[in-house]
Amino acid sequence: MTVKFLDQNFMLHSDTAIQLYHQVAKDMPIIDYHCHLSPQEILENKTFKNITEAWLYGDHYKWRVMRANGIEEKYITGDADDYDKFLAWARTVPQLIGNPLYHWTHLELQRFFGVDELLSEKTAPQIWQKVNEQLQGEGFGARDLITKSKVTVVCTTDDPVDDLGYHAQIRELNGFSTAVLPSFRPDKALEINRATFRPWLEQLVGVYGSEIRTYDDFLKALEQRVRFFHAAGGRVSDHALDTVVFAEATQAEVNQIFAKALEQGQVSSEEEAKHKSYTLVFLSQLYAELDWAMQFHIHALRNNSTSMFRQLGPDTGYDSVNDGLIAKPLVSLLDAMESAGALPKTILYSLNPNDYPVLASAAGSFQSGGIAGKIQFGTAWWYNDHRDGMHEQMKLLANMGVLARFVGMLTDSRSFLSYTRHEYFHRLLCDLLGTWVEQGEAPDDMELLSGIVEGICYTNAEQYFNFPAVVSVQ
Ligand SMILES: O=C(O)[C@@H](O)[C@H](O)[C@H](O)C(=O)CO
Image (tube, rainbow, N blue to C red; front, side):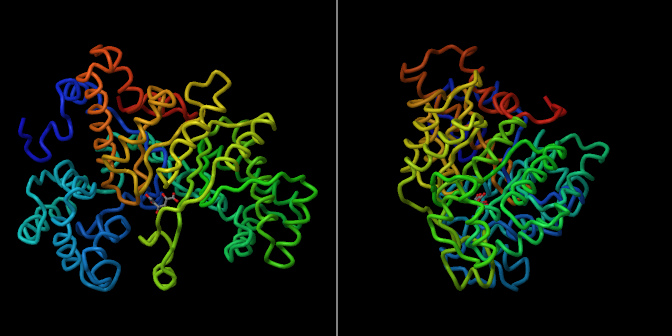
């Protein structure tokens, strides 16, 4: 069976897969429960003067491959003009065969702009003109793209000191039914040895409204911010555990460690581990009380190029997969939370696929409370959110857990055009189930399979996350 590139049965290699995708997955709405979209740009319904602004101003996935393709930095994050940057991207895309960006680029051109041509230097001029005419017209603002993609929930990633003012204004908008909810991302509260800690603590004092002289004050301030996020509709937290540490600690010990951090600005790695462990267990009890889902993003190795970090800052394409042992500290952390009587719903991701059996099996050690899929082995993340990585994660989850209770995909993106990643994932899910049916490893029971597809594409997440009333687009 010869398949035309990116046709309606793209990545669907069996009749069952085709049927499942077109009859069930294709028109499902989206809950994007982790991304880095700007709530300000959503509120303002930001428009894009051209495809370079929409595609290349903030997407370090694209920046990385442009660098690997020999494009000079001026055409990536530098001062080249937008058309030259677009040409540089158009020169790069044909070299990306096999990379998900090749698929995503053409899916986005097709789905949002009706462009079927392959992007190359040759087709760049007409694609630039056709796409920009649309971007400069009606219906291509940030909120329009979210609505067109049938997104019912967007969870942005927000610092505890954020005033969530944009989220509040979005809630007041008429005619925009997508819930844009904050996620509580308190990395700076945990990283007490980083230079960011002291200036961040000053910001926390500002929003808390009282001095923070002790660790007890600090925990009270964090609790106030968690409840502030909850009142704003937040139901998700997110933690970048670039390494996973755990150390037993009493509050008296951490009181002293916190005081030392304030006085000396530096504590030992053991003391840092005690601070992180105790603070995470404290936060987990709040998450459990409020029925939040807690996310751990594990094993990123960030900002590897010192010189480029100085020039461009974080999240600019200079990160990689970390490694190391996580099983014992992760299980000890989850056990400490459960022993404190409050292990919340938890989603475990790792950037290192070698960790997958650890995450999938650890998840199985803490399922409880009658909550289906309470502890999730999370979707393939960042350098793994491609065809092989998504299939690997779903197959392992099926082998070691309950795939049918998986809460599915997220974009994790800074681009409003990235919702086609959900379509990409839906196709891979249907293809995986279809393959199992064709191989006689799953029954050809469309009612059973359709329920599983609907669950993973949408309804599992709708039930799992305790989002405030969400206007469904179904
Ligand atoms: O949440 C994270 O730490 C990562 O997702 C990070 O933001 C990274 O830049 C990213 O967007 C990967 O998709």
